[in-house]
Amino acid sequence: MPPGLTVMPRFLYVYDIEGWAIHQVGRTWAKQLEGRALFEFATLAQARALSVAELQDYRSCILGFTNLLDGVAWHGLEPTTYGRYATYQGVRRELRMALVAPLRDTPSDRYLRRSLAVLHDPMEVFPERPDWQGGSPWLSRLRRFSRVAVTSDELHRVLDRARVSSSMVRTRPEIDIRHPSEVVTVPGRPLSVCANHKRKNIPLLRALKEVWDAAADTAFTLTVGRGTLSRAEYTGLLDEHSVYVCTSWQEGGPLPVMEAVSRGLAVVTTNVGQVARWVIHGRNGLICRTPAEFHSALERLRSTPDLLLRMRLASLEIAAERRQDDVTGQLTEFLAL
Image 1 (cartoon, one colour):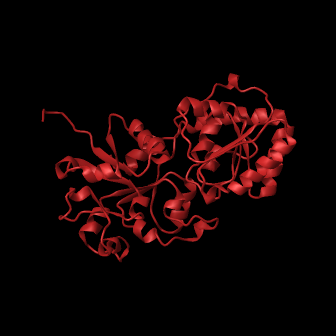
Image 2 (cartoon, one colour):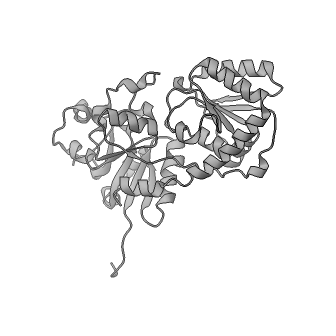
Image 3 (cartoon, rainbow, N blue to C red):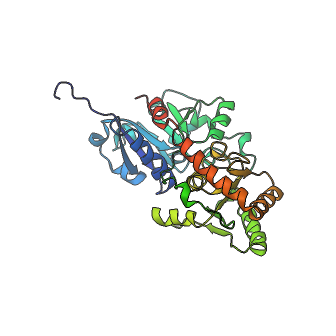
């Protein structure tokens, strides 16, 4: 190696599905650390196909914690063909137990103590139920990683109460912030886009849509499922609406709220995940706890267009403030760069 030449540390970021965790977290991290660290991305299948020689130069492997809960164990046993960063599917019961048994110095333990876990969502380690903060049978496994990062302020506090140390690495949406001149007084038009998960509280969303559509001249757009839109199409969808609605009782972001704020929508939402940093009650949205509060909040915005406009413009101000978050510094600390 020529004198003075330094090699950037390489991190293998392994993900299970195309979606939020890879595009809005992993690739954003890579962009933030450009020139300081090299991120390479692989699906679980691709990671299993890598040879020992191809894996030796990675400083560490970053994996979503759910990969350990889906019958896939990460370990450092010599008999595997993929080296110390290998995945081994269909693992034997004793290997699964090595991840949950009392800590002992096995190859699996040593590997996990070199591995980093990233929690994108509470449901990765907590039950999907309204009282999820009360505890989880999976926390013992989480304690065995070298370091843990979370994106949610709420999850960070819950883990702290459970005496699980975690680093905060905030989410920074990639969507452009809309120019204030494009936000004008228009009738309220709500939007909600979500996957079909119980924690999204979809029955309440449907009830809100039914009442809104019966009373207002504009329709409440509710999209449930994992349909894929291009960035331009999704931005256009947000820009066609003036209010974003989130009824979830468990979230890691939610990223759509951050994107809605960035495009100048007022937000009516529960106080979950990172919402408290993006929605200030009475300034750019309304925080609700009960169905009655949701109905009241939407009626207030429908009947008060001046208030709706003020909140939409305030969303753009808050989006600009949040773009100043020191994500690079948080990543540098978590990855020990």
